Image 1 (cartoon, one colour):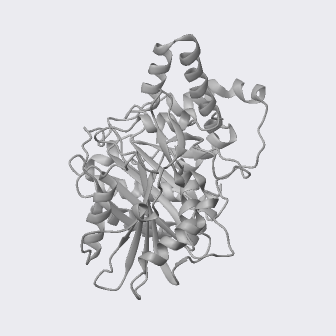
Image 2: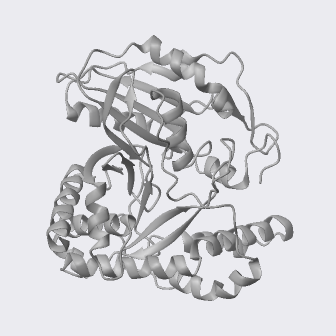
Length: 425
């Protein structure tokens, strides 16, 4: 828990990752069905009327004095944050280029760390809203709620609480004896050299795919050991990577890092990041999509039953506290290097629950919803999924100088979904 006003250790660490080539924000993309052009002033009024529910959206980060802290933004102007994208965007390809440009641009630390760009209309009448939210301000689940509250029309059915935990914890003594086994599962068997272990530049390219949420549920339910939606999604991504990477994929032992939210159901809007992870082998060597799914599902099931995500969170923070209190940089640095090694995981794949039903903005239906997360050093591909009604939108973000043809990967993932669905059902 952070002292009042100061960023939590997790949020401060995320902020410190910013550099000339790392911007630190996520992007949520709402694509609206064709209709009358959006009224920018109406959207600004809607946003401003809801800011009292999210006070952090009126605060900026102050870094003078060493410890970063949240302070009120002087002369807050909603028009600085809710803007019209300045260039003409006529096609889906134009839209991909526009959001790639936005992902590459740093947010201004002199102001609150978020923006919403109104894009279009496209030639087919669609419009889009691209919201950038700094990861030091919100994690995936909190960012989805913030966007829903600020720009979407009021609705009765809430954002899904899947992935948000009840406020209960097992006693530490019942967990820590499991730590050696958890370390062995999560950090104990590095995989192949990653094809995404490349130098990172400031360029960004995005692509998007959509699969059916009910389809993923049916695929998972068809397995003897009942795989989860996230297991099925991981298997779809694994199949897409196998196809896209070509002949070499069958010989790669690639691992994916799955971010795990440790938020509780009664956490308020001011709670910062509290995330951990599981590392899962993607089983690219298996030619049968159901074999890949079953191997992935077995790994996640074991990790969940043993509370790996919570244990890894406690371990990393305990070592961090030793570093701060006792000055043990070697242990902290070594653990950071191991945990973030491209041999421990090649690609991060997140999945955030979004609105359960249809969403509208100024009366226009949101036809598609996507999320995009930033790649990092030695991990130049990042995959982020978000659910919306009966769809799961998958965003792929790369540094195109390191990972070209991300649109081809998105198409391969959609193809892998069809392959897995036919095999399962």
